[in-house]
Image 1: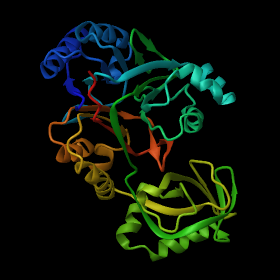
Image 2 (image 1 turned 90 degrees about the vertical axis):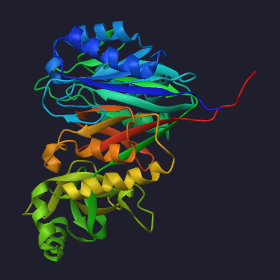
Image 3 (image 1 turned 90 degrees about the horizontal axis):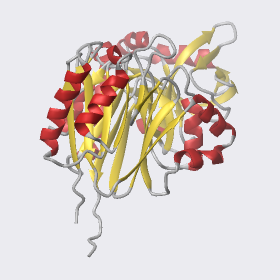
Image 4 (image 1 turned 30 degrees about the vertical axis):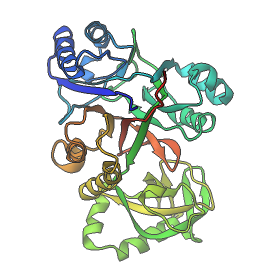
Amino acid sequence: MTQQLRFASALTFETDVRKAAGEIGDAIQKQMADKPVDLAILFPSSHFSRTAHDLLDHVRDVLSPGVLVGCTGESVIGPDSEIEREAAVAVVAASMPGVRLRPFALSPADIAEIAEAPEKLLQFVGAGEDTKVFVMLGDPFSANVEELLRVFNTEYAGVPVIGGMASGAHSPGETALLLNDFAYRQGAVCVAMAGPIQVDTIVSQGCRPIGPLLTVTGSDANVITRLDDKPALTQIQELIEELSEKDKMLLKNGLFVGRAIDSTKELFGRGDFLVRGVVDMDRRTGAIAIGDFVETGEAVQFHLRDADTAKEDLEMMLTPQSLFGKPSGGVLFSCNGRGTHLYGHADGDISAINAFFEDMPVAGFFCAGEIGPIGGKNFLHGHTASLALIRPTAVEKTD
C-alpha cells in the first residue's frame, strides 16, 4: 500500500494580511481536496516583517495546519515563479498521514548550550531515530547555525538538515521566524519529519572545478598559506595562466575553493566538494583566506561559478531524481545572490525544477545562507540552490 501524500502550493501578491491569508487558503484548500493540512511552510517577503504575526494568525485560521513553520525573506519563490524584492507570500502545504512532525524552536542561548554540551540536543529536539529530515530556518543575526549543524552531524548523523537563513533584514530584530502560534525574532525554528516518507535533498553549488587537485601543505584557521608546498597565491597565478579567456572573464564573479569532503578518495566530482569563496589574498606572504576553516593535509580544488555552470549543475543533480517519478512536493531554498543576480533573468532555479517536475507543488525563498547536506554532512552554504523533494514510501498494510 502506498501512503497518500498530498501537497499543494500557492503564491499571493496581496499585501493586506487578512486578504493574503484568504487567497492562500482558497488556493491550498482547492488543491488539497478536503484533506487536512498537517504541515504548512510559509514564506512571506520581508515587507511583512512587522505584520508577520498577524499573517501567521490568519493563515492558521484558514488552513488549520497541524504544524506551521516559516520565515521572512528578501524574495520568495512560488510554484512557477521567483518574486524578487516585491511584496508576496508563498506557501507549500501537505497532508501527510502517518508522518510524525516534531516542531521546535531554539533560542540563541539554547544553541550556545547545545554547542557546549552536544548530548543536550536530543532533549531540545525530541526527535526519534527514524527522523528522515529536519527543516531549519534561522535568524542570521543571532543564530550560530554552523555550530548547531556541527552537533546535528554527530547526534543525528546521516539525517539531512535543509533550510536557510531569513533574509531581507538590515538589523537585528527585523526578521520573523514563524512556528505555530509564535513569531520569533531570534534563534532558529525547525520541524523534524519522521515515518514513512522518502526525502531526497539536492544542494547545487553552481560551480565547476578548474585546475589540478591540490593538497593543503600549510594552513592556519581559514588561511591557506601553501598548496603542494608552494605559496597559495603562486598556485593561483599559475592556474590563471592556463585558463581560457572565457574562464579568465569569469574570475570577476570570484574565485572559489572546493574542500574535499573525503580527501582519501581517488576520483572527485562536483558533489565531492564543499565550495567556499576566496575572501582575501596577501601578496606579501602569498597566503589566501577562504570563508571556512581548513586543515593541513586536505585536498582542495579551485572552482569558478557562472550562470551556465549553475544551470548545468542544478540540471545534472535533478536528472537522476527524474528516474523516480515526480515527487509529491518540494521546498526550495535559493541564495539571494542567485536569481537575476546570477542568471540575468528571472525564475532561473524554479524553471529548471519545473522542467523536470511539471506541476509539482513547491515553494521557497531567497536566503541569506542556505542549509543542506554535502557528502553526508550538513553545512551552511552560500550561492546554492538547496532543494528537498518528498515522496511517499511503501508501507505495510495492517488489519
